[in-house]
Length: 259
Image (cartoon, rainbow, N blue to C red; front, side):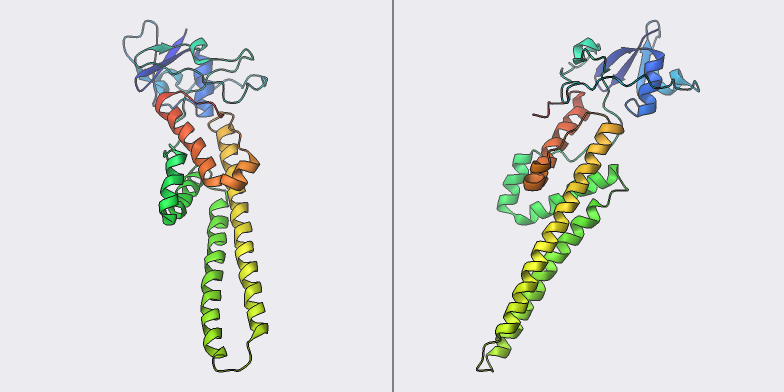
C-alpha cells in the first residue's frame, strides 16, 4: 500500500509504510504531517498510520548522491510529486521532505553585505543572529561562546589601549622625556589583543561551520558542504547564503543547488 504526504499545498510520494516509519524516525517526516493512501476518504496525521509499529532497521548504506542534486524540482501547488519528479539519483537515494526543524534566518547575503556596508552595527548584530540559530539546532556547540569571547577581547583591547594612550599623553606632557618604553608596551598589548581576539573569533566561526555540517547531514540530511576557505574569509555572508537555501527548502520543498 502506498502513502502520500501533504505539506502545505504540496503532496509528496508515494511511500511504503516502511518508508514512512523510517523517515519519521529520521525526523524528515513529522508525526503531525498529513498522509493518506488510495481509498482513504481524508488526510490523517502520520501518527495514526504508523501507530506503535516499530520502525524497520535502516537499509544498507547506499552510495552518496551528488551533493546539491537530490532535490532538483520545484513542486507546483496542488500537484502530487512523485519520487521521479523530485530528481532521485540512480544510486537509490530517496527524496527527503523538509523536516520540522527550525527555519534559519532568511535574508539574501547581498542584503547583509549592503546593510553592513552602511551600518557596521548591523553586521555585528547579524553575526549573533546566525550564531544564535546554529546554537538552537546544535545546543552542545561552543561556537557562540568563542565568538563572544573573541569580540570581548578585541573591544576590550581597544578601550584599554585608548584610555591608556590618553593617560600616557597627559602624563608625558609634564615630563621632558617621551615614555618610549610604555608606548612600546601599549603597542604590543594592542597587537596581541586584536590578533588574539580575531583568532578566537575565527575558531568560533569554524566551530559554527562544523555544527551546521553535522546537523544538516544527520538530523536534516541535505548533504551540506561548507568550504573552509569561504568560512575563513566570508563567514557571515557565506553562512547566510546557505541559510537562505535551507529556508527556501523549508518553504517549498525545493533545495537550490549549492553552487
